[in-house]
Amino acid sequence: MKITGYRSLTTEHDWGRRIGDANGVMPRPRTDVHVLILETDEGIEGVGLGPHADVERVFGAVEGHDPRAVTALYDRMLDWVFKTGHAGAAFGAIGALDTALWDLKAKAAGEPLWRMLGALDRFVPGYASGLDIALDDDRLADLYTEFADRGYSSGKLKGGLHLEHDLRRLRILREVLGRNSAEPALMLDANESWNRSQAVRYVTALERAIDLTWIEEPVRRWDAAGLASVRRGIRAAVATGENLTGLEQYRPLLDADAVDVVQVGNVWGITHFLRVAAVAHSRDLPVSPVAYHTNPVAHAAAAVPNHLAFEVQGLTAPIGLRVDQEYDDGGIVLGDEPGIGVRVDEERIIAAHAARPGTQDAGPHVRPDRAGLRLIPDSMRERDGHAWQRLGLEPS
Image 1 (cartoon, rainbow, N blue to C red):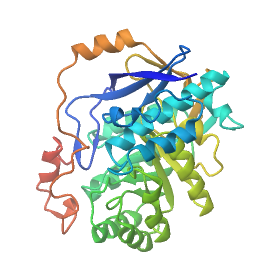
Image 2 (image 1 turned 30 degrees about the vertical axis):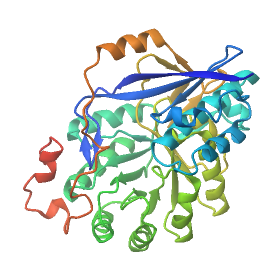
Image 3 (image 1 turned 90 degrees about the vertical axis):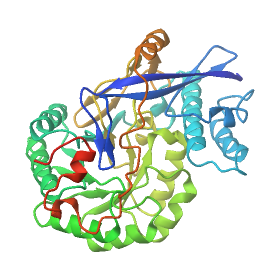
Image 4 (image 1 turned 90 degrees about the horizontal axis):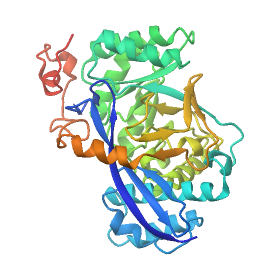
């Protein structure tokens, strides 16, 4: 079997609500989902997920090779771009290709990827995460009730702009998920919006009223000293790593004893997750994947010994994608379809793509100019509403 080419598609996921974080809110309730289809001379095709704008830059590393040599091809892709660097868009392309390679390998063997990777159980423990900063209290409760109906007893809110607002919403989350556990796990994600002193003050204030399981990305992703400082100053665990593009980027954080929960982005591929999980396991640290549409890394999470919980952001699939998995009992139940279990309806995707409006450069992927530069939290600004107006909201 040889790799002969690829096709790139863009579909959308309809969230049914506005999504965002402390950095911004998406202007529409639909977001792009990038799909890469890897072609072979035997007609078997592999599916990869995630932005892959730099795919042409790395495709030459795998073209003409047997896709079943996945880990060798992964390293070949890294070597292909070593002079200019594999971070950012290049790493996204490598991740999408890597996922498609694993999909092909498992399809060729006629097995679901979770079984090929050695998992004993198809169930992957998870936690609910609604990208929910734009929701009012009632809609927030309704959203997490949907997760509670599927057995979820752990949840993560987006926050970091307004202390009293976050505390009220965490209490709502605790009440909703409390139907499944007497002590639901509550997490807060600040998405790199604080400086280290603000992070300690903010989380310490929250912890006077609520038991916080972890704080996620309190400061910049590469700030090992800052993350370690935050970790020493609070009771909650520090979770980070989803935006690190390469195994080597974890080294300074681990050496500084700066992280309790090692996170990995789905969009960086299966091999990257497996390697990060192994390094974290060598430090007796748990690993937790950050969600992306169809959750392809869930197959790998089922197979590692130190998986903690998988982020679940939505209970429906993107337009034109059918995914062989279910959300039940507080996690993801993987199916028996060979590969990662994703089927692609290209005609439907192409039709939907042609009808959609143009993309807008606004939302949580754009870092605000004052992020990390506030001397005091927005909750102490006499409620002037500046941060909320930037998000298109009003403080309650």
